[in-house]
Image 1 (cartoon, rainbow, N blue to C red):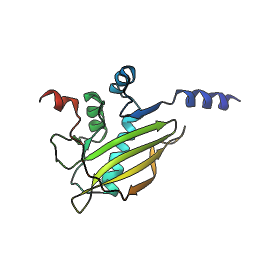
Image 2: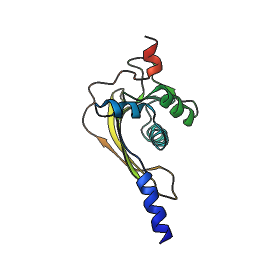
Image 3: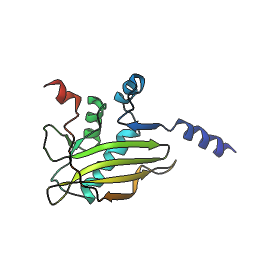
Length: 160
């Protein structure tokens, strides 16, 4: 019975989030202050994309609009110094959308392919009370990526 109570408390505290956020000022303000597990989910996704899809010599990343400069810094730190995208056209991994639902997360990501174009994949992650966030599967979509997002790093945009 004690285990069931602990499980219910933990599950009820697990965040539900979607990035980029819906157009609502309260949600937008909340989304700029991203906390765990979102930072870990993003870092795990970029590591997986780098290891499995390749396309670059080091990890350069772009997060969805609405994520603050602190989020970029925390993801970069968690990845051991990976760099945010700084200029349009720069090869990078782009998170298009992130959905966190309890112990499951889905990340839609654009990644550079060996042919010089971009492809899209959905990466599924899971965790439990005793496991870390980890990738369970991915799905590469056969839909051509026509438009690559511009850099969204607020620190970079503030300098323009």
